[in-house]
Length: 514
Image (cartoon, rainbow, N blue to C red; front, top):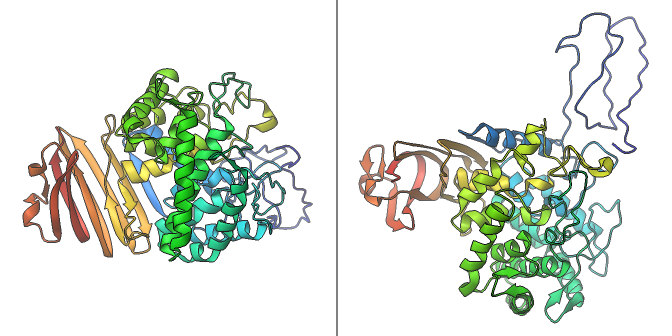
């Protein structure tokens, strides 16, 4: 708690029932001590009031694995408790700040938990308001802590979050409103580029799992990702995003300049950091390979080898456990799944020993910890309610296991991609998302070599459906062959299954998995 003591004092008047609730303070806590009670207290004696911004739930998620369900529950509980007109880092100690790095790409996953369009649009405005005339953006917004360090990763939320809001809600206004400020930050940061490399990084791969149970940060150089790797990769990603934004907003000259600089940095990055013999980047940390894979920076003729080496680092090097911190974790599950290894993600997500989300739960966690070893680390920094180590796990829950994601061709779920990734170990997965058009639902089961899948597509939308199957001819809807089903069109084989279009409605598909 540091100096934020969980203490309020209230003097009873006496003579009748009295109600007290503080209006200008809140306390993050887990346990209550009751003394002097005249009788035997029960669960109705004390009532807790959960305080958070008024954001409506945006979906639901459930699988056949209780641990995954509990992780999801902990994420929801912790995320909700950190909404306070901005997404805060923690609700209990004397910090409670809008640290940009904690929620950059992770914010995309939050759109499946709560309706956060207005909240995050407001937070992007905070970033714009905190930007200096020079273009510098602080690491914390609003800038109560005036940390204008000019590192790349934390201020990159100013670039990343508006894109997520556009993809998930189809609202281009945040991009339009803040494009000039975003471009100003990009232009400002280019002064730090030398020979295609930028080294401005203050925090590294923050909170990578340490080798000692009492450490806050690792002292092992092999676990750390060096500043030029993180900063250059992230700035390349920023340039790539800005080029896309410029295209959307009709600014072809800007788009061309962003892409040209990105190409220069990509070439310099690979020339300096790619080890063609070991298929590693730089010192071989997991994040050093993960970022260029996730951002499309790896040369095509090296991609398979770099990806295979990353899988070995995870499954052998860290024995199937997380080896990334805040930065790498925001791209981890999607990069592995897109590389056709969702089984590795499943292994990571279902571990119960250190370091893992399951380890937190095994040690009594009801939210997500700030540190992988939050039960043993130095109490100087071991919050038990932080969201930053969630990474992109929520996206994996909804977009991969649940199979619900927006189509980039028509953002905001005007067009929907339904593409579940059933993994060995799960018998079923169910997900819903409350889109602007209504409820999108996906629920699949696997049993006896059969894949059964029920989906709901809301009015005024269409969906591209990917059914995983070993036999495209086996796919039916309601027991009828696809070609004979009204509302189903453009049927064609797809890698690992069959893909087709459907219009609004509810459908039940069945196919052979083996």
